[in-house]
Image (cartoon, rainbow, N blue to C red; front, side):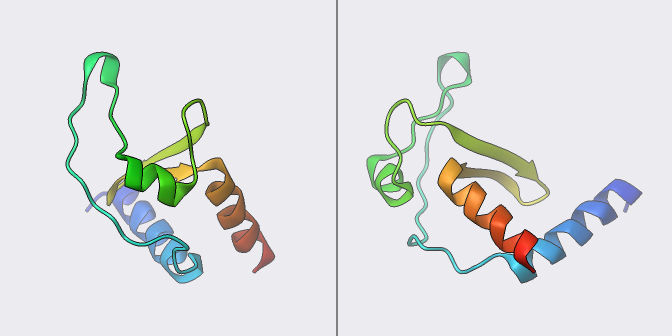
Length: 84
């Protein structure tokens, strides 16, 4: 395991202890990458995130995969981390 992988593991462990329970139900879906790298987020997931066409999203990639957050969720998570 490289130092970078250990650093990611350490970050993940910290986030796992500070990440609140999700305010939305756990959903999963299969999608396909389209032209220009576009992906479709199913309506049920957009509704759960309370996002609509034109809204900005935060994308993060880590050892666990791709994470998509609404800006509102990202701000709330950052505030909770800073508050501790």
